[in-house]
Image (cartoon, rainbow, N blue to C red; front, side):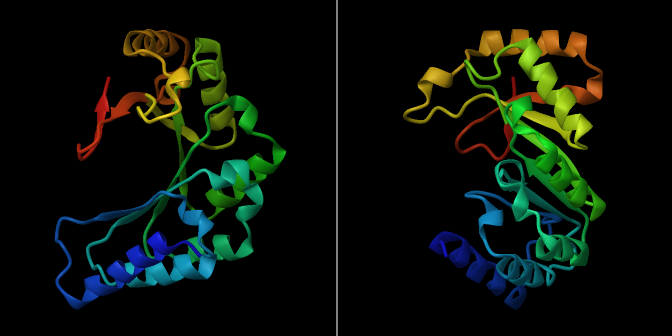
Length: 202
């Protein structure tokens, strides 16, 4: 079992022993990938979070339902149904071809728990950096019950520069995408800046 998620879980267990920060109304479970934890560990984590009386939502970022749809199994679905708050799943699909019948079934099962499904894609040169590819991704994800949410510019880390799309081209693609699709199918174009508290619109 990875050590970092377990250390984070231990930190969560300490929160109920002192007054929780009053401004916290949503908790985000993110990466690595929280669904790499066994479902009983996820339940242990959310049981600890339940001690925060003003928590209103749980947001889960995961790519596993896209690349390993069998992770959406009966114990995971039972855990989601047991949560005392509404849950939002932010999935990470970058191309329409990542959706197939198995992924569609996993999306249907997640939606059936009451979870809201959103997609957060990364703009990747040579993969989805065309209006046709981005439109197909939005249409295909929506057909699977997943609402397009964010289109990220690539994080500037070592080894991925060949996938980078410059900001001017990214804006042009996003503008053209907005002329082709209904507004609710157009994800927000953003960049994550290290040290910032949120995502910066482009």
